[in-house]
Length: 64
Image (cartoon, rainbow, N blue to C red):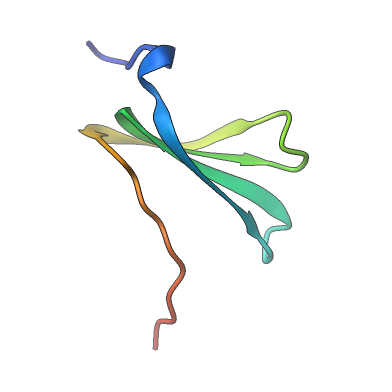
């Protein structure tokens, strides 16, 4: 399928992104998707990968 079924999306990783003052959520179980929210109720799709991904993980790291 071109897009995953909504029930396939799982394993959310949600965190507060201080720089943008927004909540960010990563979802796997289909296309890897990134959402953002100001209030944890209304979410906006920010990005979607072109490959299927299971169990996403994300972390912040310093870059020199």
